[in-house]
Length: 603
Image (cartoon, rainbow, N blue to C red; front, side, top):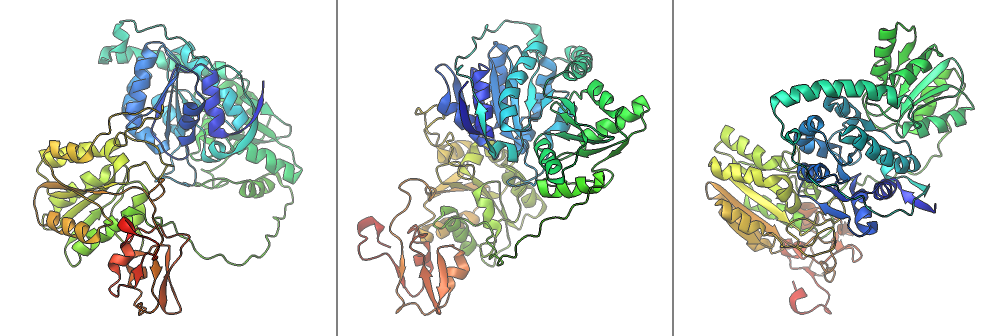
């Protein structure tokens, strides 16, 4: 088989293709996004792939395909599993026909997420098997095993890579196979309709199946008990790589229990491991899943083995593990002398908090609303996306942020609690389709007084520029009807204004007018993401003779392309996109485009 240098997500994607998937669907979310993009790029003929409007839709699509016998892959990040939890809980009872793997990328840290969540815990809750790969190479092989197990037992299977594995790179042997499996076809059967009586019977069958699976997985080749010594270490996922490296650094040995299938837990394998050690340190992210299973097993089998981990304070209770902190913990646990390497003293780097890009239209949208509502009793309910960064100073325009789409309903709740406060709800174009439409319907139906602000920059920006239903393109590379957000809002009965936020005067007027009205109404601020091709124009320049150093452009906007130097404002030509917002703010008229710019580029 050829060897390829692959990111973990690419390895998972190619492993799924080699396993013969017919359909893949998901919603973009770091750290999972590249899986679906790789399948779209390298899929054989006949394999269908799509960005669905949200994770629930993706899972239901793949469920239907798997009812017909197709092998399917669903992709999402850990918070996306919350959105998909309704159908997956029922699907766990109904089961599938074609193999179905639900990839949920966890994000210890969290590095790019609202929360830390452990999909291994969800696996126990939903009673679904879960695979936990420890390297890109293992992920490639393991996902084929997940599909095989799914079909053998007629159940969806969870697959849980974490951020470091998703984005790590390694040489991987890949198969030349690129042919999809043939779907047997849908067969009418009462099993596909969930009823309480059938669910009760299915629940009992699932419990029996998982007990059988626990025994089978004790012999799974990627679960292992290895090493020697009376002191044990239990690991899963990427932590296996960390522990292996840490033991090498320490020049130490220990018995290591590697768990590739945290649920159903391989009790027979674990019991044999426990009988050969006096204590075990569980090294895992994020919840003490392995630790609790080992404590349970010791109690059940009356084994006098001391189990250490998060719950005993021997491992950090939250956050991401690293080779460095695991090495220090293992040195203490194993009684091995260890002096952490002295880090070189480096100059302190300046703080660089995340910020909206120079020229981002969201900055203009927030600023227009801020100017329109100065001195008035308002609340600005935000959402998940690039525009969450509107919470930072100097904009300070995100008062709440809960989860995708929640800002629209949060604003309605604040209005009902405080009818004299004007409630704005900001949402992006992709998030509007993913989970915002429901809130808009609720606002109209229940006559809730809010101003919905859709920040339409024509792309799913935060996760890397993916398509959505408003763009007119699909992941398969074809064209599609571009759904109009203003038309949707007007069809719901919302009075809707469409404004270019970079036209500050018009944008501010639209915000002021909407705030003065009642009922559910909307503003669509429409301007392309500055990182889209063709979205930039000539950089602006500051006339030092006209600038009197008030600093308003810098202090009001917080644009990273602007700074004060020598008592005067200046624009970084390498960063400035030429959006013109600062020129609209400058009372001295000191900010202009270079003389070479002409026509529509003139400010």
